[in-house]
Length: 228
Image (cartoon, rainbow, N blue to C red; front, side):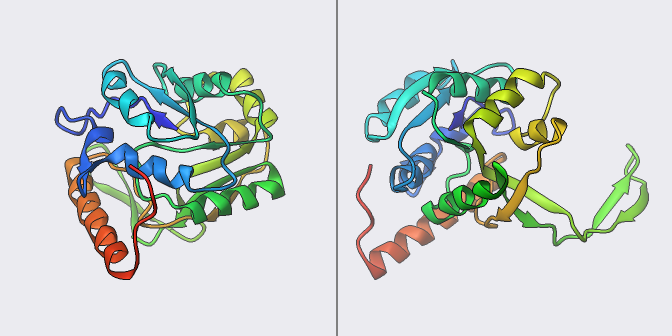
């Protein structure tokens, strides 16, 4: 799990430590993995600026067996985490700042990855897309058919992800892009629009509202599952 981002768009706050319904954001993310039977171990990739605050929180989770420090780029952080874990058949890469991942979403990823060895959660684009110049002048409307917004979890066969990180050195925005560079097929599976990444203060406001609504639903319809 990636927790090594700079949070530079959060006005000085570390998004992983933001309180959501009274608990740090990363707690919400980790609980989904703790509650997924198919997940055996979790490595949390930390940054120098948040390690001291996050490490005590990890003691609440039996499946968090390793931590390591991240790198300069996202892909460097994933590689550090990959090298920290023992070799498993499957690796699930997830952004710590996506707190509304669910066990069902993780399981769907594992099922999808069995078809091609690589799969990513995604949702279809629903907004109108425009290509524009640097000054904002519209060049054209981009057809949205066949376009997807890719999320995490992203699930990979261990050997494929290891090969990608050993052979692809140019900058990429996600691990799927590395597999694509090697010509390996990547399957998209059904994500969730609630599985958004908290990046800006506006995202944090929305996440707080979602977390409070979920806590209310759990209280109304049954006891929340055990966890910190």
